[in-house]
Amino acid sequence: MTEPIETLLYIDGAAAAASDGKSYGIFNPARPGELVGRAAAGTPDDVDRAVKAAHAAFPAWASLGYEERGALLRKVAAAITQDMAEVDARARLFTREHGKILRETHLEISRLGERFIQSANYAERLARDEVIRAAPNDTIITRQPRGVAALVVPWNWPLAILGAKLPQALMAGNTVVVKPSANSALAPTLTLHRIAELLPPGVVNILTGSASRIGDAIIGHPLVRYVNFTGSVDVGRHVMTVAARNITPVTLELGGNDAGLVLHDADLSGDAFHRLYRAAFMSTGQICYALKRLYVHRSRFEQVVEGLRAVVDAQVIGDGLLPETTMGPMNNAKQLKVVTDMIAQARAKGQNVIELGQVPDPALYAQGYFQRPTLVIDADPSLCVVREEQFGPILPILPFDTEEQALALANDDQFGLASSVWSADIDRAVALARRIEAGYSFINAHGPSAQDGNGPFGGFKKSGIGRNFGYEGLIQFQGYHSITAAPGTIA
Ligand code: NAP
Ligand code: MG
Image 1 (tube, rainbow, N blue to C red):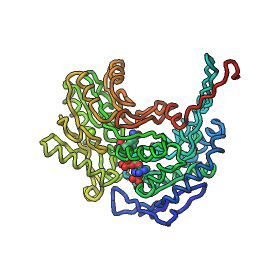
Image 2: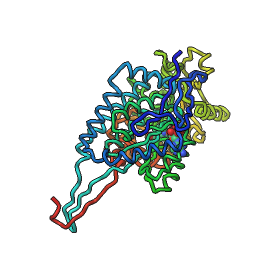
Image 3: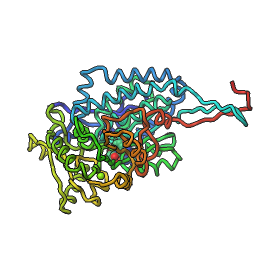
């Protein structure tokens, strides 16, 4: 049994315990009795120190050129990804505190590194100002960093999601305070320490602890100039309210209830069912842009149900550290209950609910936050699992007759995060995707394994405000600044 580890805050260039010395335990979701480690439980005093340190570090950091900041970002990418022994130890810790399988925790670490490099690659484009030489004046349209950015990440993909905010915030010239989720703080915090140590004091500050203790103190701090939040709709709404006190701008990446549309001509050969499986069940379904409602043309319905059922049933559910495991436990009891309640509701309504997958260690399954991957066949459209975000390993499959009907079903939802269209005719698929109310659409795939980080990502409707990723996401960490002078006077 591995010894529990202890992680600290990081403020103004130094690791620190919480001001009152408190910490809290994080337990293994596969064995909830096993303490994986303890994280510092930051206080509002710690928040104030961290934000002030970030504020003090801002002018010098902002005054560096993009190339200089980009070079530091490349150094960070190398430091967090190149020592394979360290990466492996980090991934194992991450699996133990989170539940997800080792392959995915490795993937998160490499994604974070890639995103530092991707952000550094925007240096030249960021440095280019637009100059308009037309009546009545000459005007330079430049941008400037916002100041201290507060970055809040959820537990489900804490490092990859950090990769959508942290390198971009830094590249844009901001200094940051980062709050990882209380549910998965250890590996993210160790990784963040590694990053912070490579940068000038105060540029990256790390605050762990429960949101009820420090959340509002961060978001409502008068020296925080921008908030980039990823999490649930309810907390996002609250964050927006607190930020409104200081008119602090927010980017909110919230929930999703992504529809996938399998058209009559979909190519379901090769690894298509594996792609569909990963779309819905990767990370035990705990992905904001997982496939959450699958609509299938009636002519292909049986084929899709049988094909998907076979792939789902072959999955091995267990401890994410074991090489044979393909699906780990859910992260926490609260999210598990959301899913088991949805299953109970569907069963109570006489729905065809099938729980699949192989469970080699039933004693472990009974102990941890496990849920077998589940399909709800020909689901009643009024079920919670169709109408709400499940954020777990359960997928409803529903038939449709015409593309117009499929489109209406996809768009009849409170969310508008991602979506997918599955068709052998890419033009037809793209034309349909253009009409879906979503910030991101995939063709013949869905989810993190198919995402292109060059494209801005985010949602319509209750899925949020603003975008992360790509150049468009990066410049949300800046504000426009127009400088105008008499015609013909600007060089
Ligand atoms: P959550 O409960 O909303 O928490 C998200 C983060 O906000 C956590 O770090 C949480 O800290 C923190 N927080 C809570 N109250 C706060 C406050 N008053 N001020 C500042 N921060 C506060 O969400 P979750 O359960 O971790 O994540 C699941 C949800 O996130 C799902 O709805 C999912 O769809 C969404 N999500 C969206 C995206 C996207 O890109 N659109 C990506 C991933 C997940 P504690 O952990 O300490 O409570
Ligand atoms: Mg749903």
